[in-house]
Amino acid sequence: MEKNKTAKEIIETYNGPKLRIMEVCGTHTHEIFRLGIRKILPENIELISGPGCPVCVTPVSFIDEAVWLALEKGVTVCTFGDLVRVPGTKMSLGEARAKGAKVQIVYTPLDAVVYAREHAGEEAVFLAVGFETTTPSACLAVKKAMEEELSNFSLLVANKTMPKAYAALKGSADAFLYPGHVNAIMGNCVCEELAQKEGVSGVVTGFTAKELLAALAVVIGRYKEGKSFFVNCYPRVVKEEGNQKARALMEEVMEACDSEWRGLGWIAGSGQKLREEFAPFDARIKYKVPEVEGKINPACRCGEVLQGKCKPTDCKIFGKGCTPQHPVGACMVSNEGACAAYYQYGEN
Amino acid sequence: MCVGLAARVVGVKNGMAMVDASGAQREVSAELLEELEPGDYVMVHAGIAIAKITDDDESETDALMESL
Image (cartoon, each protein chain N blue to C red):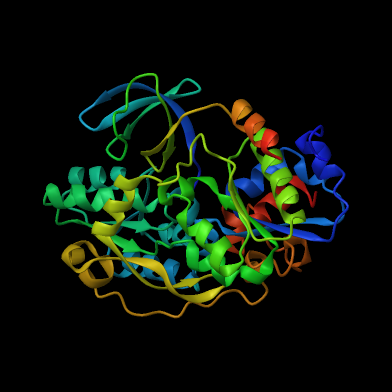
């Protein structure tokens, strides 16, 4: 029936039951907006922006820990740039910098190792956040620091893994657009199991217009069949077994722990921490970081946005008190955040 | 921060690869991929090549649509 239709036609002419599709990855969210794909969706297809932006799901308490390390311990915080403006309970790292904190923006954790090597008189702490896509680079940085016997380098770790989050979000959508590059590392096994054992449907896809449209057409086609499904729509990058070297590296350096997600709360086994043999590189141990309970601005609805319970535009402070220039919530800070996408491109 | 960058490998040396992304060149770690050679296309995340790109999106999506 769909044989002679283009992907765009399949999407535009869908007239089945309401179909809620959650794009998990923040880059998918932005590309879908930027390419105008939302404009061609019929009313019975809803796209929900999920929790796949690492900055957005990093809890306030992590920012508070980093600010404490910078101001109380005098360490040089090395970080991806978009974490600098995320509000903490009292201040962001950017505001801490105005009070004298040393904050060094790096492109990769490997650059933080170089910084530590070249600044022997400073203590460098890299803020390790992100999913399976960025965790290997943090692991590689630790291994390099160990090889070089650098004693002034450590990680403040808040890395997370996606599978438990998918399960936690099971009822939020009828199908997921899985993040292509998480699967490039982890392979497709987890998503196949989710479809077979948990009834969670989804496709993994790339980021071009062709890929996104084809993936949505595949979701529609398979959803109509009425059974849970998984399809690899990004085989040019995602191989069945993933990147085994990266997986082995993560397994060697990190182990699973419970983790707090902004908006989703604590999810058992969804976080990563350094294994005991790498304890000298664990900033929480090295500096005896006190436990903190971060407090989010009560007006901010990022948590509900991340679960697809409300749209950014449903938040009272969206575009008023909270803008990319003066963000209140993490989803407005990051270029991958849903609020930033809605602000930049409008609701559609 | 969590953005993949597609790039062409220009050279490989000592576990590092020089890659070219639309004219901008940068050195990235090649340690997590086997048998990387100049001319290969890779996906780069946070300074590390995480996957080889083995096709273009046109033929990939053509094959997908055929399967529907």
